[in-house]
Every structure is written in structure tokens, then in C-alpha cells.
Image (cartoon, rainbow, N blue to C red; front, side):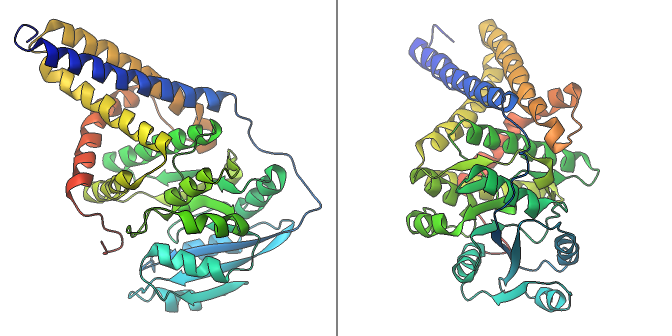
Length: 375
């Protein structure tokens, strides 16, 4: 191989190694920030916070009762809240079901435009809260959720609070993989926020001031996508140098179900990956490229190992380094997320992950992204 095409061989070896080393540096930096990050804040009294909780929904009749029940159980905090439920043209009776629920401070709104992004925008514009909190109708927040977010807002004065989200598997192997894959995304995203270079967040658990949103909403990218409002909003806040804090507090940990099927998993990841080309934040692009090319390089080393022994040795060393770096990051958040994750499972998932990532990456490039039946 080396004798036949030495230039191509050297480019492959060193370019791939550079992306791989960059990946290791990023993961190590995220893990280090996790180890030195402080946890829950102390109580801060004397300040009232008005919260507008906004939940867009489309055909969520199966999940709305549990979500409403969780909101009823919210603990009291220094302030008050309103719940704005935005119906994004549901046709499964979700709106009728919600209207039958007895819940205080509920404002029901029918979205004029189509898509989650428009539903959120319409609700935020008519909200009266100082702090906007977003979630999804299929989520289950803890009783202390709004109280904890208000506490962190009062204690940090942040313009945006990125909350933790945990996927709950249904017992199947694919669902467990889905939950761990999302957990790794949460850990990396949180580590980036702690590093002062945020790249990822989830609208399932996100809070921001309405004043900051008024500024950021006019310079958001990704207008053509049906979803992705959370990450594009995060990037807009970052561009405006707003204060962004990760809420590393179990009292704010929101739970959400996995997609349920292998097909659902790939559709979800394709939808997420399909938005990446629209990212204009340089650090986010750098992270995405390092993850993609580091894993592509590992996969390319497998067939190359049959041609050159050195490729096999490089593959073993690189895989081991990645295995340990990833495990170090995932271990850092086990207490917050209450994750059960052994090294044996990590080894298995680490062998699967490069194949899954590359499949979803290529799918994102070739397939149209869809959300709730819409492109």
C-alpha cells in the first residue's frame, strides 16, 4: 500500500490522526470541566421570578396527562408561573384532552403557523414571564424543576440555563443504546457549556430571559428547518456574548422516553444531523467535524489493517485511547443522571458507535429531515 500510493497513504494517516487527536483533546477538556464543576447552588431568597413555561405539542394525547400531572406537583418557589400550551395543529384530540385537565395558570394557544419553531415563537411573544422555560409534552420533570431553575437563575444571573435531559429506555437493547448515546451527547454539550464554548442544548429543558430572546431571535440561523430552534437559539445567544450556564442539579433533571424503535432512532439522529450544515458557529462546526472524521478514520483503519500491519497497531492504540477518553467523560455525570453503565457495555457500544454515526451522518446528507410528519 505504501509503495503504490505513498502520498495518499500519508495524507490518510496524518490527516485522520490530526482529527482524532483533536477529538481526544475536546473530550478530555469536557471531562476535566465536569470534574471541577460545582453542583447545586445554595438557596437565594428575596427575589421574585415570573416564569412562562411554554410547551408546544402536536399529537401528544398519550403523553399530555403525565406531563400535566408533573406540572401540578411543582414545588412552590419565590415567584409564579404560567403554562402556555401551544397546539401545533394536532389531530388526535390532544387539545380537547388538555382542556379537560384541571390545572392552574394554563393558557391554551392554537398556533397560527406550522412547525414547532413557529409555535414557540408565537407563545414567547405573548408570554408575560421574565424567564422563559421550554419543554416537550412527552417529558416528565421532577417536582423541584421550576424551583431549581428559578434558583439557578437568581443565583447566576445567566441569560440562558441549559438543563439536563435523560432518556428513559423501555428495556430493549436498542432503547438502552439510544439512551446512552443521548447521554453522551448531553455530557459533551454540558462540558462545552462549562468550557465557555456551548454547542448543544435541548428545548426539552431550556430556560432563557425574554429580554435576551428579543435580541437573539432576530439573528437566529436555521429558519428553513422545522425543528432545531434550541441549538440555533443557543448559537445566537453565544454570538451575542450572553451568559450561558449548565444546570448541574438533579432537581432540574427532565426525563423523556426514547424513540422506541431502531427506525425512530435513525430518523431522529438524521433530523439532528441534517441541521449541522447550517451551523455558523465555528467551534460547533469544529466539534462536529472532529467527531465525524475521527470515527471515519477508525473505520477506514479496519480494511487498511489487512494491507498493513502498522494500520492494525494504530487502530488498536487509537481505539483504546478513544475508549478510555469517552469512558472518563461518561463516568463524570453518572451521579447527576443516575446512569447505570459498566465498562463492558461501554466497550460494546464503542465498537458499534462509529458504524451508527457514519450511517446517520450519510443519512443526514441524503435524506430529508422530518419532524411530526413534516419536512
